[in-house]
Length: 279
Image 1 (cartoon, rainbow, N blue to C red):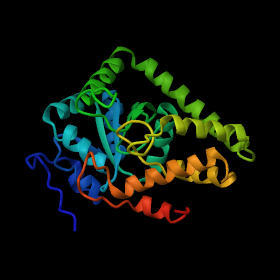
Image 2: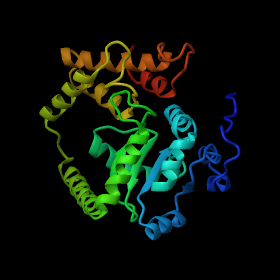
Image 3: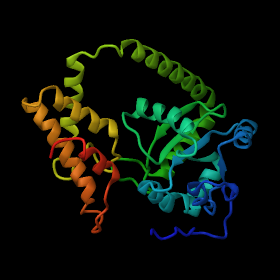
């Protein structure tokens, strides 16, 4: 049985202490003035004309706990968040509808997604900046979380009307894109599949598995695509390599990353997908 996670600063208690979600309760004693998703937070943002910082995760998410420890338990970081933003914490298992809407935005604007999901919204809940995990200091090719907070706060104060206008245009573009995708979903050209495969090849980590650089977030759609690409032409070199990338990554997930942990961390995702393809 996993050890119960104890809050780092029990002297702090925020509104999440009244929630039922295990994930939200894990943040009930952060120095961040967290609000649950709801009208109280929205009204405060409108009343004070402050942007909303939305953080979405779930109780068993590793990087959610990392960011919580590094940033949300940090007094200095919390002071910036409380001063400049209305901060909302959401459990994606409790509110998949909220998660789905803003994850679409993050994936469309950054090319990736995962949890914790970090999104900045206008007071009327339109997203204008999004990402996932942000480190406490510059690393992984990402800026420090405090630096991101300060830059967004400064941009909002300097020209929030422009940000609101841009966010409205982004939402309109996303809606048009989704409509076009539905209309075009009846047939996918083979060149599109090849282009997607080539992108995965370029970003594949042949040493540790996965795609891109750390922190990596496994996406089932990636593994599903690679197995389907293999199934289209199992004798081709590209098909064989697609399956090889898939299986290598899943086995690495099942064994755990030896560089970051000496413990074996079994992966339910890895086991379930490995069962679908030949070994």
